[in-house]
Image (tube, rainbow, N blue to C red):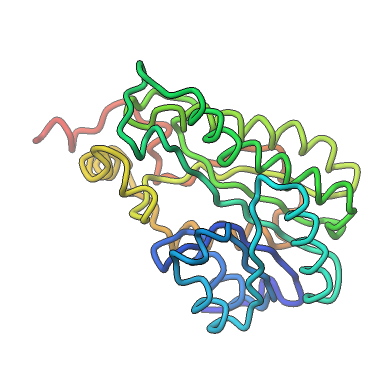
Length: 266
């Protein structure tokens, strides 16, 4: 149900790969709520996924961009402002990738070259996105920048490997850059989302077992990708203007649980 929360707003969505992606759901909900958007992903992801199909469905321009490239980001935000007809009101960063995880390297035997790539893609890219937006003065007053995170930034989940450090760095960037962006009346936050069945998430060793565990541990159950999209819409709307520099848990209560009787009953 649309309430036009984002009527007249312009946004850029990073990371939509296929219809399981949280970013895909966010893009759909933003347009449903009245926003106009551009979609972006790395060129290799554009070839693999169905983002062009999403672009046609939402009447959204798809602009290839490597989020680790400052030149690509400058081009992306410049073209987005031209296409959308003004400054950008909201940005979603939904990017994460670890070659060590993909190649099943254990945490005690990581390849450091891959680790550095993980940090660059999954976390430093967020700083690059914000720095480019800041330098270009591309964000509207009271704009909103959101990145997706995970509770492994605070707690230990062994199979999540160095993605945990990536998320911790991502959240730190949100706090640090959020301070500077406040001068421009722009807010910056991260959303710590439940384990979610996505193409990327499902590739993590033991994902299904942990998904089931988290679902039982969370009083409300795991938050779905669709529910996360709803939350992102509120964060992009004018209803959350004074929320910034926060890591916001969207996890059905998992983050405040110690033990659940549901697990003990098994």
